[in-house]
Image (cartoon, rainbow, N blue to C red; front, top):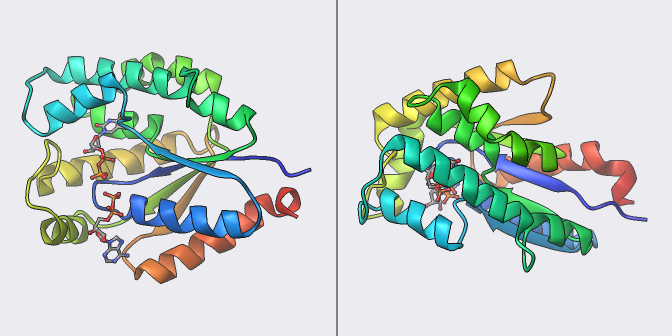
Length: 211
Ligand code: ADP
Ligand code: TYD
């Protein structure tokens, strides 16, 4: 019987997560799996509130933002209609564009990392990813891509911020290397090369279950 997996993509803004989520979904579906893709912040009312803050339509303190992410994530897991736990129970492999490692990296410059980890422990205890895929890209390449693709700049999308977040990701990956399964992928390459690298690793990781 095929097992279904939970995979979380991580990386700084513009690292190519959503591009790779889409390509991995296609490959897994071609391999015969049912795949559900999702993202954080979500489309729930809480996720919308977060996006309003990020798009400067609403103002909120960084502590409030951190708490909103915690709540949005719990709803992302537990929502009875399309929550991740329900989709997994229905036999879908779930791929999310961002999960709790994003909060560890993005909120910890403003909040104590221990607090962020503790506040997210309800989610981590409910569901840890079978695999986190961290797309490692330099902040300079990322800003360049974002400037080409978008007209408005979100809250955390400055070079200085992305450098901070990138450093935090590196620290967190080192800190959690024994607790979390984290695959680091060099994202400073072509879309196709990155997708091929991810696919080789996914096959290696889940080979028994996917046959
Ligand atoms: P994220 O979801 O991590 O913010 P996206 O997948 O939306 O990143 O990619 C950000 C921008 O960079 C998009 O315009 C996308 O088309 C482009 N892009 C994604 N991957 C690559 C790549 N490997 N090389 C060049 N441009 C890329
Ligand atoms: P997202 O829409 O994924 O941005 P991008 O596609 O550019 O990566 O996420 C929006 C922003 O939310 C992004 O700057 C990262 C931030 N974020 C946090 O600060 N904490 C979190 O827990 C999550 C999930 C995202």
